[in-house]
Length: 124
Image 1 (cartoon, rainbow, N blue to C red):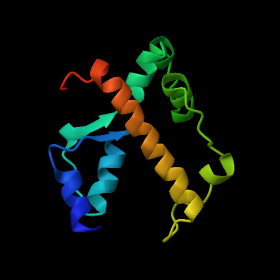
Image 2 (cartoon, rainbow, N blue to C red; image 1 turned 90 degrees about the horizontal axis):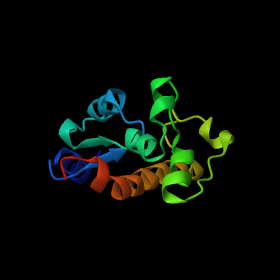
Image 3 (spheres, one colour; image 1 turned 45 degrees about the vertical axis):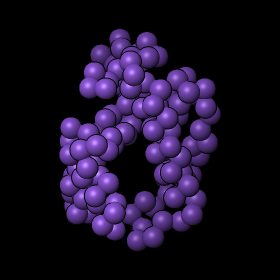
C-alpha cells in the first residue's frame, strides 16, 4: 500500500465512510498494513435505515442493502449484477469490471455520508 494512502487512512481528519462497515473491515485495513483510527470510521447503513423508516424491520433482523439505500436516499439506481457480485474477489489482480463495481460502492457510500451526516453524525 502506498505511503500516501496509509497516511490518508491514518489521519484523524479523514472520515472513512462505508456501508455495512464493521470490525471485519477495520481488520482488513490492519492486515494490509493500514491502521485506521476507528473514531473516523463511519457506517452509513444505520443512517440509511433510519432515513428510510426501516428501524422496525432492523429490530426484526432485516438490514437494508446498498442498492436499495442508494435508490431510496439518493434517487440513484445502482447496477449491481449478481454475476459480478459473485465473481472471484480473492484474485491477486481484480478485473477492470470488479474495480469499477467496487469503486461504485465506495462512491455511493461517500454520497450517502455527505447526504446524511448533517442529520445523523453527532460529531459534525
